[in-house]
Length: 221
Image (cartoon, rainbow, N blue to C red; front, side):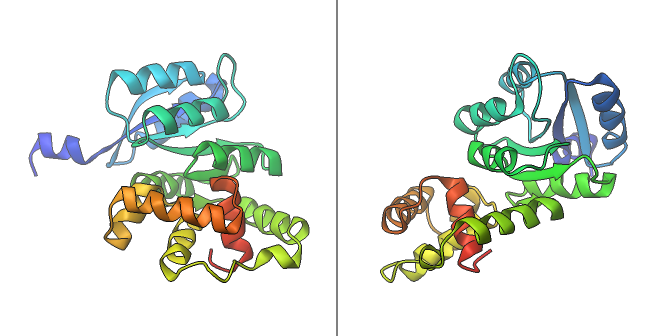
């Protein structure tokens, strides 16, 4: 493989954390991997957005609590302005509000800072491939939230949900973005959006985070 081809195959990653004692060592450790280039260790979301606008980025490893622009707002902006950039949250916070806010903003993965290097690398690679990785603690909290907040009557899906809409909900529950769903189902992104709009209307789903909860509650994820 040529040097140019090797460079193109490497994942371009930004590490964002307001604590230099966290982001610098983490960036250094990740850079040891043969398939990763850490192009920036950012202190806040403003720096992340500027770097993404300036050049190609594949994945942002995002802390949540940062000055100037926090991780939630930065994730939301990336989802809207640069949907091809995947966000993996890496934070000390695993409360319901933080988890749901990050997923609603468009995060493709959510890890706590108890995660080891291999867990972080796995999440980065999965996110770059359009997949989702959730920390076990995060998965458990999502399941607990669904079980305690969703009445039995709302856990089932409406009878008029089509098989294709059920497939789409399953993939949303797995954390896949519209592009990856389209590729898996061999349909266009426009068709995926149509299925999602119909699904949300039929099942009274508010947003993507709510769709993840419904998929879990229905045993689809």
